[in-house]
Image (cartoon, rainbow, N blue to C red; front, side):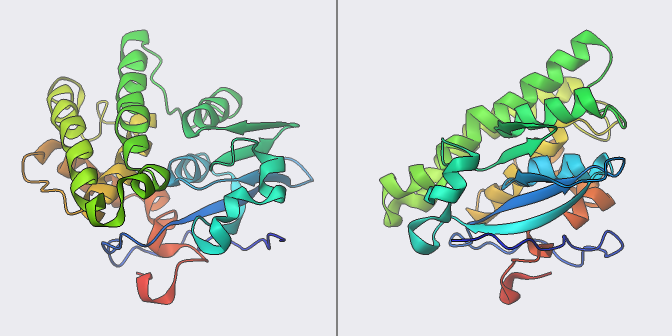
Amino acid sequence: MTFEPRQPASRSLALTGSHPAQPTFSYSHVVLAGIRRQEHWSRTCFSKKTPSRALALKNIDYEIVAINLIKDGGQQFSKEFQALNPMKQVPALKIDGITLSQSLAIIEYLEETRPTPRLLPQDPKKRAQVRMISDLLASGIQPLQNLSVLNQVGKENQLTWAQQVIAPGFNALEQILQSTAGKYCMGDEVSMADLCLVPQVANAERYKVDLSPYPTISRINKSLLALEAFQVSHPSRQPDTPPELRA
């Protein structure tokens, strides 16, 4: 099995629609990322839109190779992909001579090595709060409705299960945001927490979670989706997105 690189969607394109609710849409990405000030390209693999939005915000060029989590029994289990990430999970990032996995670790590395624009506040209290919100989303909610978990639940129970694990996390997050949010999760600057929020709201919509009890989450998500970096990395705008799901 080989992974063919593809260019990401042009950053000049505008988002014309939201990602439809499709529980069977389980695509991820391997990304070949190159830093503009370097002469060579470094291989990267990604799935979650969280790291790809960090790349877009930090103006890092990248190419995409599609990884289908269902086709061929899950392409993430191939020997070639396992060589990139022994956990056989996406995302993973190979850059600057090292390979990283896990979305938050990738974002933290990009933040420390390419700090502009800043995704973690300078104030230590606000920085800790951003990390708290990010962990709540990336570790407290998202893994519970991963494909590997849903497969164990059984197809007939997947929708109910996803709703039951997302709602408690959103209840907590809505309360936390009352004291941290401005235009975005932490005041009026986009942070790592916002990168985690948008894909989880998309998952909530996909699994038909009632978002009316979460006006702050919904408002922030709407503001973020208006930003170019969130538009070009939207799942409905990727090269491997099936034609019927394109925006």
